[in-house]
Length: 144
Image (cartoon, rainbow, N blue to C red; front, side):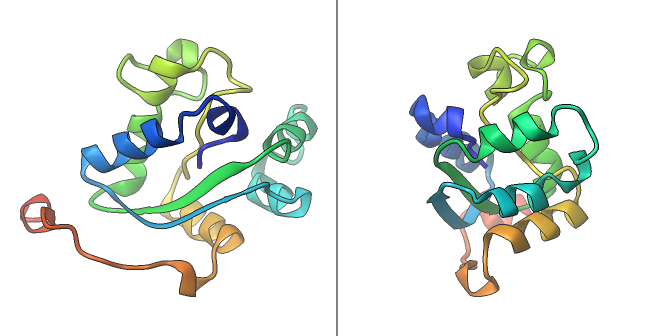
């Protein structure tokens, strides 16, 4: 997901470009302002944390771009592309390492596991909105 700060800074294309250049594919994509109810479901694991209300307020403050990414080791690769949650600790070359300065406004979100991804995808997309396709380079990406 490109969060509202990433959308407002015009970084959607940069984020998508990094994902696709890495060899992953986007099979669903939507821009919308997330409802408070969906945001609370999405971030349910943080409900008891002190930053929860500000997180919900931020994520619902403007449009974000949600997407479903597929590919070999997609969860781990997306986490690496995004970089550490705190941009100060994020590696140069990652989205957060190159483009963010603040944990609360760190441009992107990625699921931390396949189980979380399935749950989060279900919040943002209907199954019929996910469009499978093949990239021309998939045969050599998945050979090993």
